[in-house]
Image (tube, rainbow, N blue to C red; front, side, top):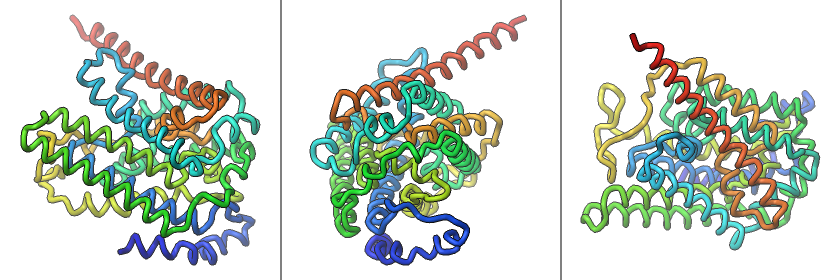
Length: 389
């Protein structure tokens, strides 16, 4: 009911927008793309992201962190079984890109190459941005999904620190490279998207219904031993990746121009803030309601997995976390792309130039992941040698 009220009241919120009134006196004016419809779509899409985060945690017992899942495919000594586990989620993201391209292309705006590359962002800059996003998210153990939604919903101090670090770095990087000025606002100022808030709510409800039905079916099939636990977990990962991708499309976060405008201090588009807020409004209370042991771990086991596999909330905030988050935020601010939208855009690109542009960014991102993991393995190897008598 709270979500319905928030979405249906979105036009009224945006028409007055009292939050921006004091800022306007200081010269801050909300971007033209920040409207009641965009707030409605952001809240609806964010709610789906939060629900998917919780559903994956309760069924498979692990984190919904896009970079943490997919970057594992670049790790040395990766087993075939682990690769299949991780690829299941990636496949869901890629299927979402295809689905959005053919059935809901308006939510994509204009493609990456048109919206950014031709607007002044060079290919070398794309490579650098992709590399920083990849290396930084691996070093900092997460990105906007793992830290921004999952970790913050758990009230993890590490995730709160990481989120603050990559947001500050994103604002600084976008200001230095003038990312927002490279965007063509016509890519997000359309009469078709975002739709009216009730339409966004209905679409989010439909996605959640199909997702919930799939999760329940997998749980029952696993319980009846029709499929193995691992097969059930992979199916959950697949539909979770698909749902996550559709939610990003619904919220408008697959258009890098809208994200870049979020980093525009003088004329911000605050849609991203409402997406994260919508996700946390669902995930945080759900985490709080789960019965916990004294050490903070859940009392109830996952529905499909045998046990939970999540980092401890009491891990200390260290230099590696903060530097990784800053590196990631710097790359994010340079182009307005983080791992999930970048991967989904591989299959949502409609032309060869668009595909070539995003493939370049993704290749650099994967290289950043690989460099981090290879360097970590090499460093561990050296340390082991030095420890030998």
